[in-house]
Image 1 (cartoon, rainbow, N blue to C red):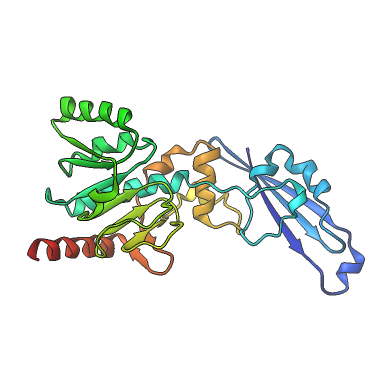
Image 2 (image 1 turned 90 degrees about the horizontal axis):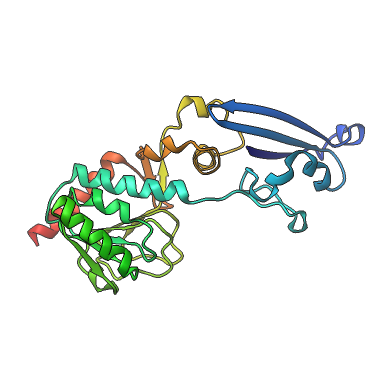
Amino acid sequence: MMTALKIEEHNKGIMRYLRRNRIRVEHRYCDAATLKCVTYEHYRGKVNWTSIDRFVKAQRNRVLCAPDMDIAPASGYKRFVSSELSRRMCENAALYLLKHASDQRIKVVLADEDGDCTGLCEYLANYCDPVNVLSTATKIYATQGEYLLNEKGASLRLCRDKSCLHDADLIIAPKRLEDALPCPSDALILTGEAPAAPQNALTVYEYFFDLPSKFREICPDFLDEMYFASALYTMAGARELGGEVFTRCGDGVTIHTRGSLVEAFKNRLIRRINS
């Protein structure tokens, strides 16, 4: 069950004196996804979170709502936020780039401090050898290295410090980057969250795709489609969304298409090879 909440402010005009606050509830369904849409019509006084709570109940700590909705700190409500789908989109974007700009001389580095992305190495081995991994999860990646060598004849090079980034072409960092990476200015960084610190290279962390029509039909108009997709993927078991590949992506300022990002990456490789 997912719960979406919208607070409609009606604080102007004569109707604010003639009507009481009220709540509308609607249920929407798609496959295994159930969405409860709660709309609070606010005409006067303060928002009565206790009244809303009767309909939201256990979903109060992960309610779907617009980013600018004013949530009272003492209400116990929290806006749902998850980077799980975005991290998966980061991995998909990396594999798409490598597939369309394949060159065994590409130096790819997977930054995975906790060893959560070992499964990605098997796919990276199709495009680059060795697979370079920046991580302190030595035991986990030692096991993964043995697997790659035995099953695919590919090698995995584990790096414990960031010196391996100095000549990287593509850096894949699904989790949030807390510090600036010591990489070339013309490298490309793909990550699943907005970095905590400014990076020295183009850093893509926003991913957009066309939400399947069956899900678009139940998406409330006050929610961003990619935000709704994240909730479907994380809470409603819509795992098929994890197979989507971006149609557009961004760095918070510039939007790139699949084609423009591939071309930019190819041009970077050409300049490096010719230098």
